[in-house]
Length: 348
Image 1 (cartoon, rainbow, N blue to C red):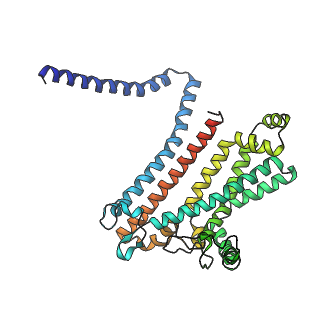
Image 2: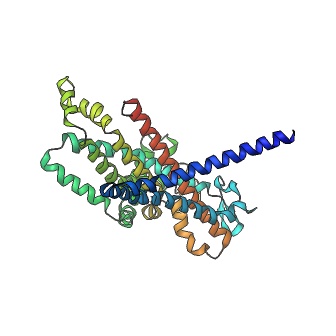
Image 3: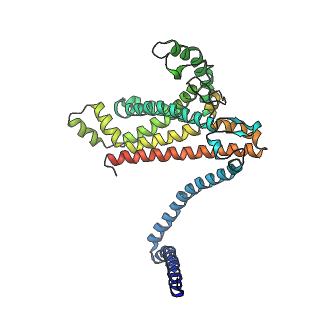
């Protein structure tokens, strides 16, 4: 390559850098110039936009900072020969032997969440449809108020109730009934002895805790659907149930999706109630009656002991990092499904 060609390449690179700097300068100075040139109302409007931008950026920054902090604290165990990225699928957790497999906690959390969402979302949407479309007006507000009050009950209270009522019921009534019934006795997920502290108990109490969120948000979304859509559907000969199922729920899909997203976030991150009823056993559950251990519970139980042991402490922060990533992935996946549903219905 000749010297002339080298000079031409360097000149082009310098020109590109200058162009980028000019563009950046323009992006920075243009709002300032517009602000100085605007009248009083224009300046007020621009200042309002700037102030509203701050909380939006702050929420994003908080998530980034939390992820960065968790990554920093997790680095020792992820780079140590005793740990490494393989701990994510490791089945054994034994800090005394420097074994920090968090796979059992991931499985426990995912299974509890799956059971809770599988119960809470259909039941919650059904309850919201009843309140919005079929419930008499004199009963609607009292039922909705009671449902909203359920969301304010502390999780420790739910946990105490489940420990006293639900756990003995599963041990003494539900498990024997399912295991002796010819229809369900052969099913592998109903096998095994149980003391009531089980995966099923964790999933059920989570479902109960999620119901107020699903019902309240979905009801509000259904009530925002214009009445004209209902009247048009009924005028075309549809029944009230067909209108609710095919028109109202479809039109309220974004709000229903928001209820599901919020439920997912709470289900994955719930701690106290699940800790009290799942048995906290370091094993992967193979049936609904097996005890399990979730990610939030292991952090709550062991962080106080582990804080003076760097590798153990780092492993618990790694559990938190994985929990955060799973929560974000759940939210993004739910948003993608909501967007797909809105697109197929012509909303976007």
